Amino acid sequence: MGETVEYPNRSGIKIRTRLNGSSYGESYQVDIPSGVSGSKRIRKQFPNLVKAKAYAETVWQNTKRVGRGLKNLTDQEIAEYSLFAPKLRNAGYSLGEVLEFALSRMRPKDARKSLSELVRELLEGQKEDLDAEQISYNYYEDSRKRKTFLLNHIGEIELSDITRDVIFEFFKCVKKTCYSNKRNYFRHFTALMKYAVNEGYILSNPFADFTDADKKRCIGRKTAKDSEVHIFTVTEARELLDDAFKYQEQYHLLGNFVVRLFCGIRAREASLLTWDDIRMDDDDPYISVSARIAKGRFQRNPDIPPNAVKWLSLLDKTKPFSLSADKGDKAGQHYDNLWKGFCLATGRWEYKKGIKRRSIHSNLVGRNLLRHSFATYHYDCHGEALRTAAQMGHKQSDDLLFSTYRSLVRKGEGKKYFNIAPKPSASKIIKMPRTA
Image (cartoon, rainbow, N blue to C red; front, side, top):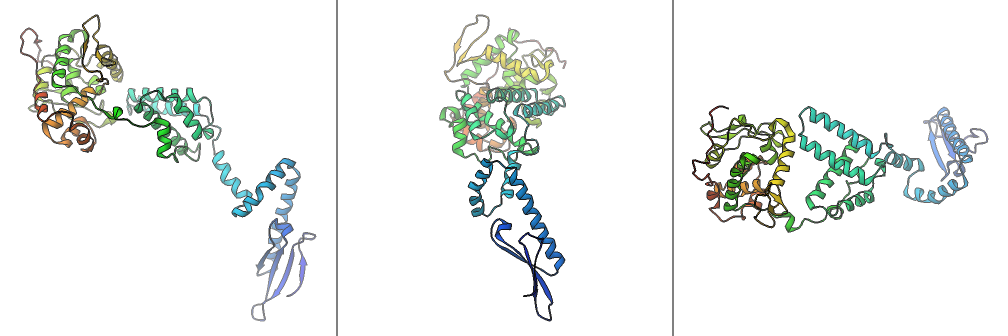
């Protein structure tokens, strides 16, 4: 062992010259005592004196900076660090490492952004998508209402403060609504927080670690009643169409009902159809559901069966096919309101202006009733799930159709359903000019 010096002066750090033999020359060992390092004694070897002194200087300056910083700490802060220092030491982390990890998550780049600011930002973007016709009016309105409801019930809060407990408290506000409604709020809330993560407003999505039990705590359990699908009987479907034809002048619903019952058209799509979309003069009549009106902008050309052609032939083509087609996407809302006023209210068909009330079923509620009826009878009639899915604009999978609709009617009912045609009566036939 060679010469030993203290460097820097009065630091307690020693630099020792080590002789490595005549073939290898000298090396320099820096010895840092535990009082300087703050933990255990440290020894490091360097090939020359310059590097050894540089390392010793760096350690000493860092130690002095820490010492100066301690003077600015309160007694409570010093006591708190002293309490947690052993835990950090045992875990193998320094205080700096822990703070760097934690603070970036608790206060990321835009940590002061509030939930209301995020909602406003998202809705502004969706409004631009609506103006560019990339999303539908109904989609925008549903998104706006759900985000507003969420904001009103959670209140003004920073995104970084949205925790599991906040989420659970919110879902207490929607506890009395149906399962599907709570599920939709869960999806909207999850998407909202995912967007916040993608934009760097928070580093982790509080929904990311949700278990199945957590999800059930929010939206409950899907019961057999929630899963139950209801359809018209053949007799009920005929009665509905006869009534729609009888009151066509007042309610203008016959065409809407026909394409939903026999062509699998969605309620919103039916409300936006024009006569240009109804191709009855072709050898194989069909409806052109263009990207303009199709859900998800996925266009398709569902067939018009012969019985539906007969019903549609009764309509006056000089009048719009859809009552509110000129109102664009808002037509869907208009038809929904008219449907509720004309047809359903807790299981009863209610006609306006004092027209008689007729009970159908206690559980026939929901605007998908017509579309469910189509799916059931079409599948029974043709026995080809993919064909039925294509007509309805579903993804090309037969799992849903096979499991949901195959047992709702007796075999052979589908042929009866697609033979529902107008009763021959010259007094009811509306003369239809051959103009588009």
